[in-house]
View 1 (cartoon, helix red, strand yellow):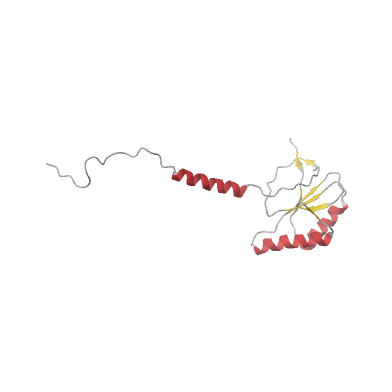
View 2 (tube, rainbow, N blue to C red):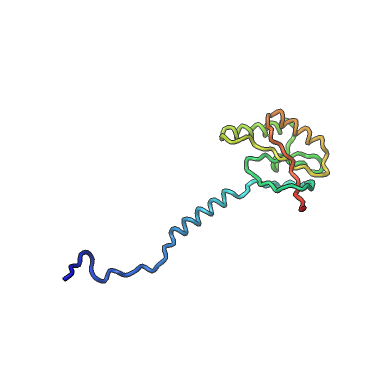
Length: 145
């Protein structure tokens, strides 16, 4: 009495395989996010930082890292700086590239060896002020309370 409309009678089989395409898509997006958020700025200049109780700070690619070794030699990331004019030139380029990219003013992180002399650091801070960078901080090793 009933009338059948549509396909043939044996077409009601279920597909029992797992569709992994959405899983792979999500995993690739997570992988890309993790690769982007990994701190990319690391330095190889060996300095013994002063120990202070503070919270660890994450490295950002837009931060400028100045390092002073025990002899007072200045490094811009890993490259040695000859004089204050060389430092000012590199600071200007970093500041101007941040402006062109519509990013906030870069922070200057000073990593000074705890046995380093203060005079080269003072000259570097003066150069930073002359360029017009206002966010300056000293990096220390965090101690456990």
